[in-house]
Length: 619
View 1 (cartoon, rainbow, N blue to C red):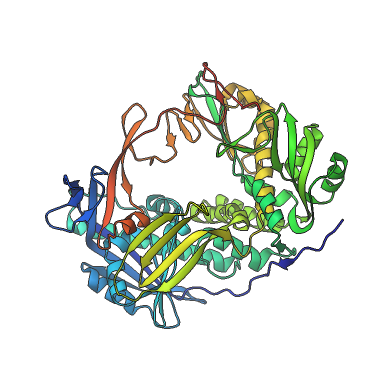
View 2 (cartoon, one colour; view 1 turned 135 degrees about the vertical axis):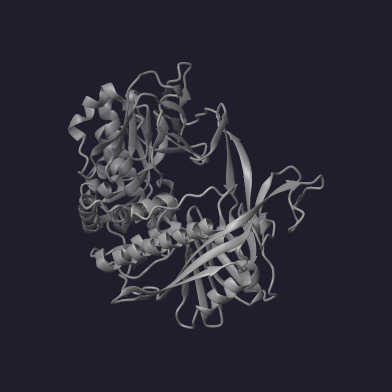
């Protein structure tokens, strides 16, 4: 059966390089409300104008007022040394100072919390473009921001602290036991604002010191510029004892992609849930549990277009398998894409399953036909990796070391996704004009792709479509996420599918009276077991990732600090991303806008009955 496919072995990494020159940056701004005129101009009497569509929004301009920098050097035997603190009130002098620290052969790493805000409001893009710096790399998605530029042999790498710590600076300060200062920006005295800003830089400096020490102390290889990159790099440096082979077969890749789904997020009730006592449960390190205990693909060995149920049963005893199958089921256990949503229907339908789903379907006689399939050699490739970091996490929990607990959790959660990561297709061309800061988007009706042209730092940067990364092996990620969904499903089944009120990837919400059904599975420490995250007296569910209790409100797309101004209506200040500033060619200040959003109860991943109960789609 074994077929020889063209494969490339995933190489181990060597080297423990660390950035030698670090600069930690924080800024404070002066603000001015911007009102639209009849012609659609965003105008304030003392500063720039730029064009928006009339009636688009009321905005606030943020201009640099003051800032702090802390320059540190890293030495392997001594960690961070020789802190140099500088206070700044002039943007041109600020960037003259910072660029002087970027010496040939040793890139300067600039760290800021949500660093684009600090760069944008301090004229970074204006001055460094004018001074001839050129773009090398740019990435801005989610909470990850990376910008790399050079001038001659000088190089600067701008990184957001959220690349490594994807939460607020206030929370980071609590973890480090360096609480963020509190000020009222309407009335704060200048001296207090200066102190406030410096404290933020201190938190950044200390956080990265802990981060680098964690890499050093645990022999985790070289420094990477994102948490996912670090997890993957550390695995390849220290833990990759099993050989993993990457294939380039187009048909197999398409099959793997069709079976790669995310976490299970479902509401089983819409509205105010009847009852007076609810329990919120989490699964301890769900993905870590799967990565430790389950066999995963390591090498493609066969691909075909149909097989028998008996043959599938035989293969699953030794190998990992992915297959397109026709199912007839009364259990809402299997993931399927339907109208761009991930649903878990009953009835008769087709989908693509991995080993865990296929075995479950075999055990329950749900498979009626097996179509295209792929077969892989299998191994527990992440077992030692997970054991190491879960053991460390347990140790740090006993020591009440919150920052180290988080770093262990980060490495457990962000590794597997690298196997399914795609990269933008990019073309770069020099355009040395010492100005230009814009973004244009064109949708190609023939290819169905969107082409984005960005001018920044004297280069034209074109992106069109996406392509697999150099380490693309989707079957690995697909197996992990599917196995995780079935761990969750078995807990749901234990308590009764119809008794689960809400689930989200690794968590469940049920009525407290049903908790005894899960008693044997509750263990706060054991990997893959349940822990009680909280208890509430009230629960209202208004959709996927949209619920409230007397303690908290969670609404996807609405910040936790948003002000509620009506039924399902919220007001908050939205920070514009870089692409929005580029579209408007804004180089010398940062724009926020006041947003009013109405998020009404809505659910389209199942059938909502008049009673509020939600049942799975039946095909």
